[in-house]
Image (cartoon, rainbow, N blue to C red; front, side, top):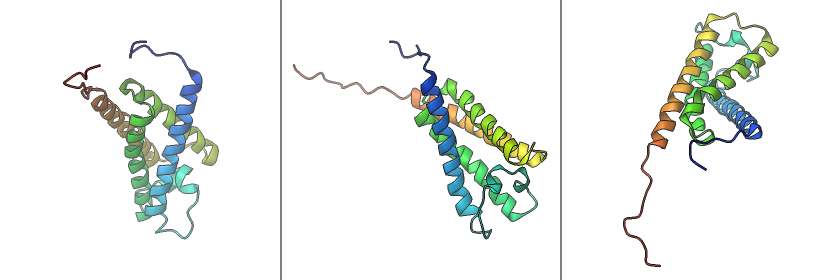
Length: 152
């Protein structure tokens, strides 16, 4: 089978989406614990899914914003190893942020904060573009071919 010929495997796609979502929230949890957990008495899901916690008015809000952006950067690296194809990075990034939007709607209602939309749009752009760049860099690496053939 040629490299570009892809077989439709919905179970693989669903597994990749679930793994990407879980790893994204795991890295966000680590960044939240380091950046936000030192500032608040109790870390909760409010900082993950409530649009009111993403604010530029407080230092804690800036820590939440930094956690989201840093998670997007790490998410781009996850795309390289989990998805492996540059042309699929946009699709998987969009899927991750759409699922995140639905979780946020279920948790706290429709996000009416402009800051929430800007942070998530920026995170989406960073994850998709940096993921594509890193995947392209990986795809363009030389294939190592031994200089001398061993005698058989």
